[in-house]
Length: 205
Image 1 (cartoon, rainbow, N blue to C red):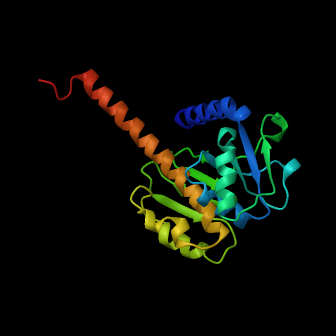
Image 2: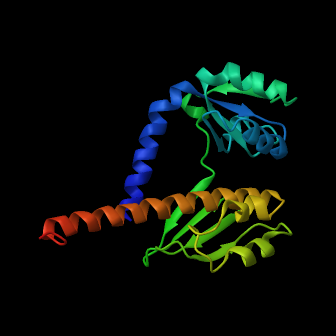
């Protein structure tokens, strides 16, 4: 639990430091927000949920670096995509809501949730469960992912490539975060093991 807490504290601190230099892009529909995310892959963007005060028919928004606003607008115009508005995040009351939630269990497994889609993995990254949503492709996604190791799944078989609905999109967000946490946790364990071996003189002659 301490490891996850330390990760989230570091991320939160970085986000707080950046908030005065970031803004939100508001869209008419979820489809437009997802399309914009693909178009703006080269920019410092993040998919979030807009605060209720400025939500206008879409539960997704893009958080972006304001220094990149001119380039972002140019890229969206080039692709015939017109957002409803660009809003600076200098006002604390307009803080966007995180889409992703993480819960750690006593056995070390974690459940990552994005929207209504959840994925649960153990310490080694084995996928224990996939659930949530009401989309027609959810049973297929669960069938293709459950029982596999999240670190061994190729990019061509991640949820966004297997499915075709908003559920597949949000499950992919959960999948990516779970994979990131497992990688960091395993890297930390390897470093701890290496330090222990050095301290004990293991492998030295």
